[in-house]
Length: 304
Image 1: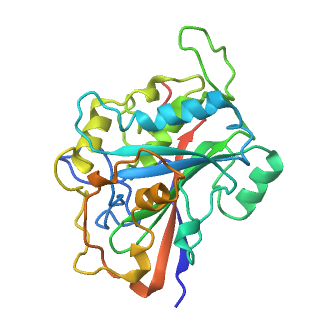
Image 2 (image 1 turned 90 degrees about the horizontal axis):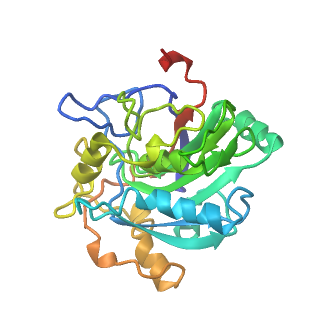
């Protein structure tokens, strides 16, 4: 049976409850069920690429900002995490998922650059509403929450996504947003974190125009990172995953680092840090796609 691709679209401002003891939130496989398993990568070495179809990321400066944004979650001076991202350069594909040929899949950073393309995505149900700065799409095994592919798409059709100098006034242009501020938030979704209520956290759901504070992880963000992807010890999910099965339907999607290093697409990725885990069986041959919606521009609900 060929895998089926289901689509789940999460509510923009919905906050996922994971327990009073946690100061961070984990994305669930089911937004409507707070007891469902949380999403998580089963590896700590994760490659990513930039689509050469993206107009936003055509120059070396924006590509450098992208790499820096991923590194905000991995290059921590506290050395509390073993999470490593490896940039593999430009690739021709965009944000898509090939459920039949795992080797075709790459974690891609791209943008929607025209109003026509944005309207098409909205019509297809892949972009919940126009006033979103970016979305992250994760594909995962529905019984374990194991992420096997993730893509980030920035809305450069509706908004001016630039590098903002915090020391210089950005003016009152509500359509201007900082690229790194946007991407660091999205990378949080990329690795399985959901929105939080702490307005100072990177994973807070909303961003004002010209905001840059999400570039730096808050204590809560770091707490989640170091708890789920610790430097020493296995990856820990916010809720237990089913174990005891190792289905052929999912193993081919794992260890992207190994796959891309062997093909010399990604260099310097130390796959010796990968942790081994059991996965639940490939239930009904189904994959699930979650669109994690982030960074609403209109912050009216949260303004004083």
